[in-house]
Length: 290
Ligand code: URA
Image (tube, rainbow, N blue to C red; front, top):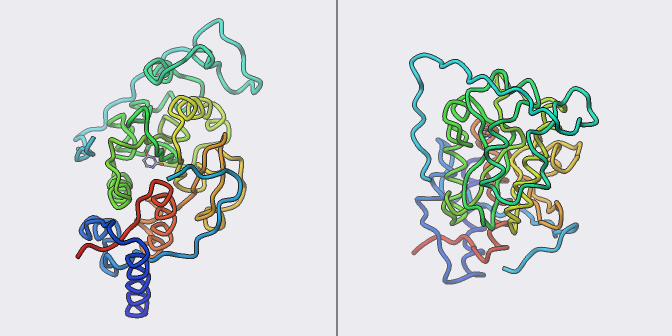
């Protein structure tokens, strides 16, 4: 089985290399992403590529070592909701700290999100995880919400899943600092549970504003939560992944969340096929060196 898998991958890569001479990727980078006991760089199989339908395609900080604190610091108390702002329709959601229409840059949005106490996650967070990267990024990755490491450091995707995301980004021939990384919710749901619909509803306006300000050429949605809450899709990620969707005129590629890929190594093959579709939009094609 492993041998068969390996051989089919090698065949795919050869085909890709023949079709796109002159472009290459360091096999070490891909090996890093595909890593694990049962995989090799040749796991870079191209799965069948569905044609984009909804949205036309455009033409073509180093992650710190996450230090585990000896004792868990107490969450920083969230500020009280700002008075005098419009009440949202859902009475369980507190008003936003500032009106989104009055914000014109990520630098303006950042302090508003830091001050947010719209939902109960504010009470248990240690840090708001706003998002980070190039404010003019062509490529944006959106995950679910901060985990333990992200909550402690106030930065997205810095834990184990983040280390895998770094490898995925590198395998796509991007640098982490060239892309933008954000989440559906900016505060950690306790125990890393999936954010509730109310929590996501309270926070999604910040993500939408980030997207509106960055206007990336492509968005990669990592996992079902991002697809469900940004696009309102109900289907699971296994059905949605690998097929182009759209958000506000921006092509969107859903794929597996890196945390899932850590548990399910065999799914990396499909994730890599999804990422290769994104690479093609930017004129980047995988082929082995040499
Ligand atoms: N998982 C996410 O969805 N986001 C992060 O920032 C980290 C882990």
